Image (cartoon, rainbow, N blue to C red; front, side, top):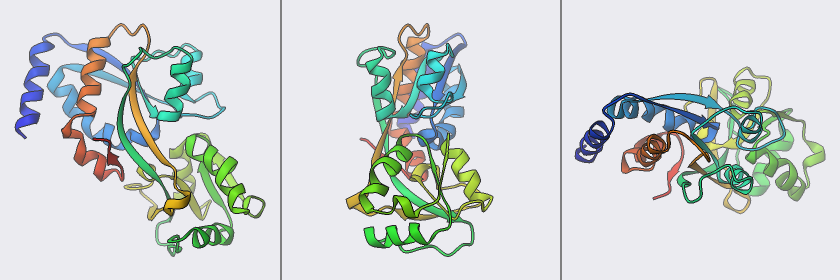
Length: 250
């Protein structure tokens, strides 16, 4: 609490006038971000406009595609894999990127449905094969599952998989009982109405995603952007990160 009060006072003293900041964020870190944003805005006097996009993929709603189409942002928050693509395109201010949290891949079922055993790789594979329909997001986790894991397990041709553009769309499909299983980052499966989180995938087939924040090149609000990233990576973020099924980086 002492740290929080000190941090809030420092923000207020350094921000006497209202500033505005644009953030584009993927679903993986959305839970902690939504919990922390109101307090950050109140303490800093910085008004944040939040936009949404997928970390990776081929659709027009990816963060990369939106930036290429001219959508503006000061800060991006997305998987490290997606961020590396933006860094390669010189869209990120060098050394402005900060890792925020890590999320394992997890599995969920519609609320009330029996929870399958996924304690071993074989049990996980059997659960997928028995499911009539699986839904995954088309971003970083879905790319790994469809292109790497399902072929590795030898079950790709035995599955009926729906790929959605966003993780939130995948959980909506699951909650509506239009699929039997969803596999995606744990942070997108916990605290979701209509969805029961089963658990993380076995360690030998796990993909731990790191979600990071960075400042967009030529952002006119770089000082405000730094303050937001500082706040999201501070000790104050530990509890919201844990509540969202993630692990703090530090």
